[in-house]
Image (tube, rainbow, N blue to C red):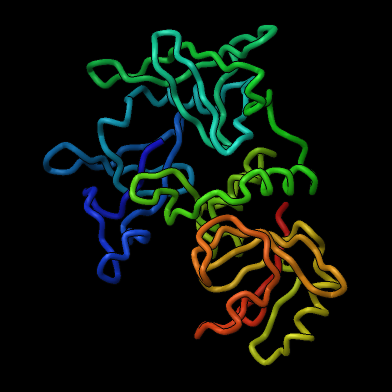
Length: 295
């Protein structure tokens, strides 16, 4: 797992002094085995500008291993495969050491044994070229599954609640610590079912099917009625700068699970939509713009 940066530097850039939780040039992260196309290299050779399946930006060159187009495509499209279903999973390399994967990461399945999966893991030779090394995953971890999980509401909710309480991390990295932000949570919990969403919240909103539009002049009661009557649990609720998974309502009061760094929280939480009512931005309910369905 490595960072994708707006510029070829590891320096932290913030909007306000000491606001280290929000490094504004931290775009996202890419995980073990993510195919990339390198289109440019920094003058010092330390950074490579990469196109990934869902983003682009600068990646440390030492974190990339180079293969032919055919080798990379074969690895990326390998079948059968195992899927990481936990927030993080551990793969033990036969040659020594471990690799950490995150929810939604696929690894080619080479052999299934009674107590373990043998998988292919991309590693880097001394000259930077690609080697596919053997790794083993203990089945008792229960952090991986062969193939994808069923694309059901139960799967999506189970995946989301498995991340409850996990610290928030803008661009998936908080001063180098593992985490997710709101849109990465939505992306990862769906990735385990084989649904590949864009990385950012506004892009996710655009590719999904709209169910309800919320207008600025709508009252709280009107918004709650629309959610209760027309929006199914498992839908995604969007607003400028934030996105959430809709859980349903209790006596007309809507609830969501989301990854937030606002209103005194900095983690994955379950809340109603009154959160933020006393803030300058207003409540989540009043900020809603759309409810959309994935798939």
